[in-house]
Length: 150
Length: 350
Image (cartoon, rainbow over all chains, first blue to last red; front, side, top):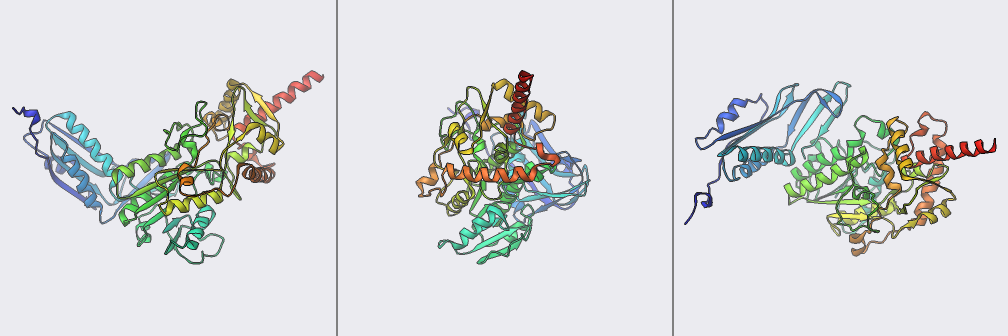
C-alpha cells in the first residue's frame, strides 16, 4: 500500500522568470506564486545597500549576459522540483539602480514553511553562484568596482 | 588559451611559456594595463578589466583561462596593495568575475592560484601534507581569508557548473625576482624567531616553478587541487646555517602575545595567527605535478639563497621609511625579542 508521503509528488511550477531594466514589484512576484496547496510562501528581496567592504556606496548597476534569463530559469526549475514546492518566481534587475532599489525578488510557495524557507534560500544561493550578472558599484570616494556573481 | 595579468610578473611568464608550447595553438594575453615591457610576441593582447562583463567578449574562442590578475596575494603581497581599502579581497573578487565570465563565454577550464597557506600551519600537520588534506586555515587575516574565499568560489563553481573545470594551484611560499612578501620581511629581521618547543620546516616555491606548474594545469595534465613547491624541506638549523642569522627562542605565550599586541597597535599588518606560518609545518608534496612528469627547477637551498638576497635588498630600500615596521609578524616579534635581550644584557653590565 502506498502512503500519501510515498506518492510521487508532481514538481511545482515556475510561474515567473525575468531579467528587467525597470523597477521590480514584490506584489507581482508574490501574486505569481499564489497556490491553493501552499501553506507557506517565502519571499526574498535583495536591495541596494549603502556600503560594501567598509566603503560607502552611492549607486550601482547590473549588467546581465544574454544567457542570464536561462540561468535563472534553470535555478527556478531546480527549486520547483524540491518536494513540497508548489510554485516559484524570480525576477532580477539590470541597469542603473539607486540606494534601496530592489535588485532581485524571489518567492517560493510550498506545502509547509520549512520547505518554502529551504527552497527559497537555495534558489538565491544558486542564482548568485550561476547567473552571469555583474554588479558595478560606485563609491562615495569616487572609486568604482565590478563584482562577478559567484 | 588566455592569461589574465599577462602584462607583467608571473602572468607574463606563463603567457610566454604557453606561446612557446607546441600544444598551444593561440595565446590571448589579457590585462587592464599595458605594462612596461613590449607586447608579448606571438600572443594576442587585449586590454580588459577582468572583473567587468567585457571579459566575456575578450574570451571569445578561448577554452582555457589562467587567472593571474591581480597577482595572487602570495605572489605580490606588496605593502602598497595591503594598504588599499579593498586590496585583500581583490583576487577573490576577480576570481568570482572570471568564473562568471568563463562560464558565460564557454571556457572549458579555469586555473586559479591560492597558496599552501590554505591548509593551515598546525603543530599536528603531517610533513609533508596530503594534497587532498582538509583546509584547516582560519580566516583570521585578510590574506588567508581571501585565499579561503577563492577556494570556496572554486568549490561552488564546480558544484554549480560541472562543465567548467576549475583547477586551483596552491604554491608553497613564493620566492623569486621582485617577489616581496611576508616571508622576505621575515628574513629582514636581525634574528630568526623560533618558538620554544616547536620544529619549523621550511619549503619554498620559485616563481619559475609556479609558472611551469601553471602551464601543466592549463594543459589539463593536472586537475583539481594542485600543490607546488621545491622538493622536501629545510630544517630550522639548516636555514640558520645558510642565512647566517642566529635564532631568538621565545616561549609560545610570549611570542604569540607580542605578535597580537603588535598587530592590535597597528605595527604589523599580520595577525598573531599569521605567526603560525613561521612556527608550525605546512610542507606540500606536489604529488599531482610530480606524477605528471613535472620537476622543480629549484631546490629549497637555492630558493632560500634568492630569498635572502631579496630580503637584503628590500631591507635596504625600506630603511628609514615610516613604514619600516610593516614587517612580518615573526620578524617583528624577533625584533622586539632581540631588543629585550639587548636591554637585559645592558642592565647586567651596569
